[in-house]
Image (tube, rainbow, N blue to C red; front, top):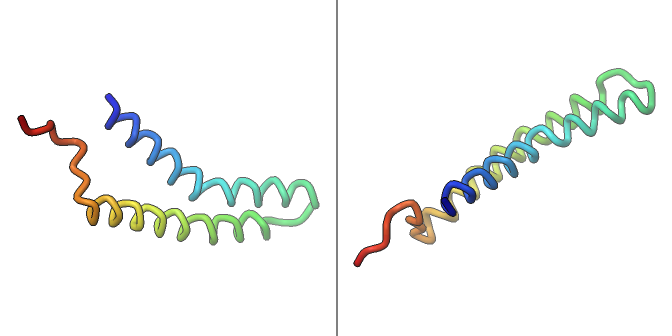
Length: 74
């Protein structure tokens, strides 16, 4: 159960990192009355950042040798 919650937390964090800046940009566009300038800029920054964060996160777990999804040896 702990491993499942860890994965849910990780997926949620990456999703927010990808989509959050774009949603904030869309809100700024509506607030300032501009076209989709800030929204596109937010998504253009958020998507690569989210992918980079995901790659970095999986690389860190692999380097640590984290195999927390496997049962402990007895």
